[in-house]
Length: 390
Ligand SMILES: Cc1ncc(COP(=O)(O)O)c(C=O)c1O
Image (cartoon, rainbow, N blue to C red; front, side, top):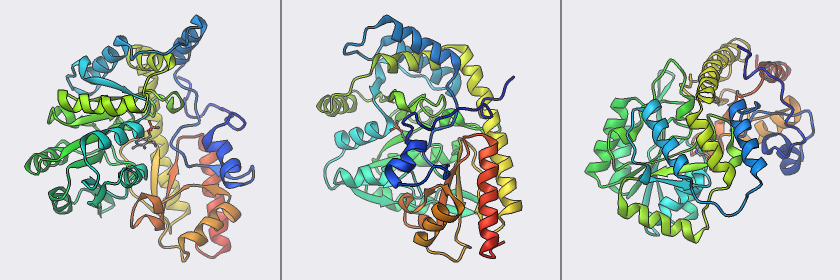
């Protein structure tokens, strides 16, 4: 089968945040390689494009409800792929995972309440809590023998002071696929301290074939799950996401907040969810993509270990994000930024916004053609040599 990742796709000039945002937002020149925002430089599954074209051909784009077929598609997907039984009536639409998390926090907590996160973590987790005037209780992950783990002591201390926990599962940026044992401990603690668990599973469908994602909702039905086909099928620009919430009263409160924000799907969001989750051609496409991502991730890490020995990574178990430790380079985060953009000419996601110890890290998105990644590593190698770092 033809590789998904290695096919050429020109995104520059398409108003892509990742490609065109570099010039528009940061005034960087054309030759800087964009390995940052979390989408991939590939076309989505052809069967999804076909379904969207057919929706477009109908020419009916009025205000749209969340399709019952889309709810049923999510139900069947979680049943087939994640051994989780979901009642379609418990599945609500959201125009994005971050908006869903924000609306849930607003609906189920009060101003001043505590919300637990585990840094380093996807920056909006911190931003949405602070932006909603809730308090962040961080229970940082710890790194042991090249693998990030939950610090259950810190988690318990944080939960004692909080009413809600934003869990990232699998975890962005460290790439951990939490084990059933770890997640069991999470729900035990949450029940003990009466904390609502909200699990962001947006990366779950990109779990590498050598690992197994556990839907935390299968361990405790009161967990609220937020997810989307957006990462797995590379359709983030369609804003097609959903919330699974079994508790009637919580759903009512979330809907109240959503109504305030006019949350409705576009016709394309409905179509995308149905096509991604029910067409077996899309499912086969995804399975091939997961294999290719795991292989490419391992090759990139090997190449970094060989060519850039001052950089350190842990091995992700899902998705296409690689958390790289730059702390051995004798530079501040500010100096590194101008070196990366000006000399190396590679744009990574700076680690500072991911949490207190993030600033000596960068996150690399490996979801692109191998050639570009090789070029990025070669550029880093040359510039490190110039500075006598390698
Ligand atoms: C963990 C996580 N949650 C949410 C999002 C964004 O989701 P959305 O674009 O649907 O708001 C991302 C994107 O990188 C992510 O990594």
